[in-house]
Length: 178
Image 1 (cartoon, rainbow, N blue to C red):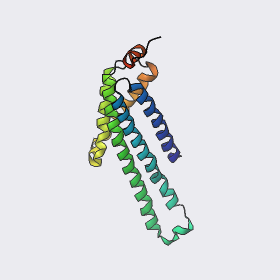
Image 2: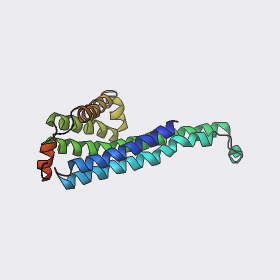
Image 3: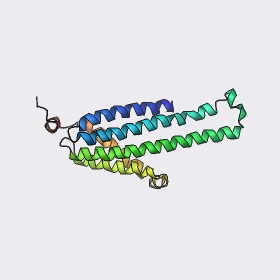
Image 4: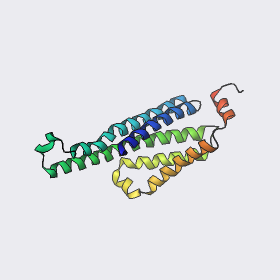
């Protein structure tokens, strides 16, 4: 079930990435595309890395071909796969950090969302970038995680409750108003 949840998370984030690309194109098409690129790479890394999350079940599953290994070796392999999953997840977070920095800048430059949301998302990006150094990320935990979660939750709630200022979005996009 955890594996399925990871893949659903990746699929949802891909949709969010595409929606944000379209939303922020009027602000700066090139930066919006670059942000989408970093997010999609992060999604791909986490999708591939989720295979490492599933691998211990295979290693410890008792298949006949694994009988050549001692129990201690199988446990060590299972632990190694879980460690690789953690490392892949952290690398994905670094890509999401760059994504959040770019989205934060785009929000800040937009006319249709509050600038404070852009600042919060940029700070979330900095929090995710701490995962470049796992010791630093561990030292700052849970503050880095809380900052990232607070910023992303704030943006999500704002978009769900308040939405964007449609007229300002249209003006920035150069689209004719209705």
